[in-house]
Length: 330
Length: 233
Image (cartoon, rainbow over all chains, first blue to last red; front, side, top):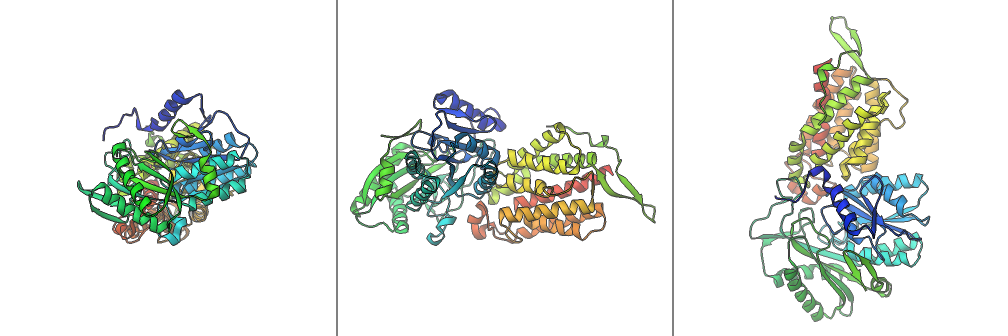
């Protein structure tokens, strides 16, 4: 696979340099490791997000006003090191504690947990909320075992707004858990992405094959089938999602149609058209819709649908303004 | 990559001659221990394509890359930092891995080295008892951190048998060789298991027939320890 890189060892540090060159008035790099933080430090509970690279603009693109305060950046598809998490924690802590908010993957949990032990020794309080929105990755009764995918975006948005309000670490963590509980996603893979430097793609799919529920690193999904039309795809996915989330008439949701890398906006809007149609038919109210490629896996083909069921509290935080170079909410 | 002339290392460890007249090495000094692990690190780095291939079958294919990043850093630090004890060697390797690799392997393999010397008094020789104590303690730390046990298709499936082999040995070199053999058997056994952790877990029955990459790395580590000993002692 052709990739625009210099050397495999330097892909992440060079990406971070490039981010600073572009947005250096907004972000600042931490001293030693690949961490980025808001240039203007805020006096509030710090929100630390992070994970492996290769999913851009996740995660760094969600450090912003009304969003997260810092990001720990790992190598491609590999969790960030404890040192990185610790350094970012120190950079964003204002004495009110830091919330670790990231997708539920074994590597991330091990590294963030070790970082939490280290920060505790330094007298900084942390709490952790794992994002588990991928409904295809484990049965509903094991929601806590599910992986985190594009639903990250909604949870980051809500939590950023809640922490901006000056709430305590415990309260921000409660709202984070609630936002996660109210968020579900389902994806479909059309073609694989590839790790820079690796010759083989992360998985193989036949020319006319697709896989429902496949994870963003190629984790196997729930069903492999023949390619179908946009509407047929959307119907299958939405059906699964609505059932899992037990959505009914009069429920109010936010919608995110997320491209996985190489699926175009043209295609994503065709999907969104069908999503709106079905939700309208079912009497589920759409509060807001976002169509974008936020949570990608390099040049992977496919998309995911995320719904977040709102209540009064979540709606209030969703409506609050937010800004980053990759996300705007007015 | 750092080139190490392994032939340069002379045998200045403790030697004993048993009744049959065969020389017997009972311990390694600090510089031998460091040389052995630099050799181990090089062997793991050389295994990158092999580990990548194994991991691509059941994981996301980054295990070889990660191990290679970690051991490169370990070589760099072992050559640059002051090392005066056996503890330093293990600590430097472990911390290099934890701070450079990321991913689950960074913590788990870092703990394989640093976890064993955490509460260990300073040692300037590595004998069978010390090596056994170090790896026994690190096995415990890994289990606590990773929450995995035998049969979960992880590195524990080869590391635990290797530690058992060390415990049941009464001689350093034979013990390390036996540990490598038992690790190899452990790797073979992982082919029959489904995974309880990480990305391989999602593959369910589909991982059966494939060996675990982490368990394979453990075997490579013990096997290259054996190789170094055979060539240099």
